[in-house]
Length: 298
Image (cartoon, rainbow, N blue to C red; front, side):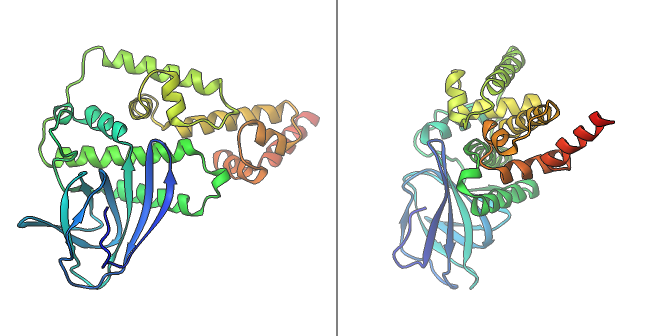
């Protein structure tokens, strides 16, 4: 979102990778406007966290609030007004241009050869589940230590949100749906299995979605979308499950140094490992290890 020098806007980067950037913005403008014309320098999507603003273009205007996603096409111009004194706060998702093309092509091939603008709509629905997932993403990006935050998780979660709000917007505006080839299901099954093989061989590495996709000669978004559909869970969660269950097996085999085990399986620290282990199994690694020792002793 381009900024006007007159608006009290603040921006903060929450996540940035070659695939997608996620930024928070806070606007403290009072009721009034429209302000000076603004220019969108990139394609991006805004999900609101509080407040509202009105986006004016030509004689038209739309109100952006927490029930909607707002779409900004690169090169578009608009003016902003505020209907209330509460200002507004939200999250800006800016996928890499090539990746956004891939997302739209996957969701809606009929719009892939669009002439200029990226989005054929200005707003779209933001359902309850999407709203909560957006807030959880922001919460974790704000609070997680950088060394314990998996870039795979951040990229995949952000791209899922981008894809979901785009798909909902295409559906809301009645644009034609994609048609699946007869052999697509077989292709998707094979891709999901290839991802599993890749993950099993790289349990101890800090890998990214982009790296996995590159090794399998596919796009990051297509890989993430297909894997979730085939397995019922995102790639990062599947990988975390592999690591934790591998850790449990090592503990049963007598592994004693929990910090070394955590680092071997690419957890950033003993505490990071312990927290993830407790969420998965309901006990700490040391409790699991000691319980297994007691069973063996009996």
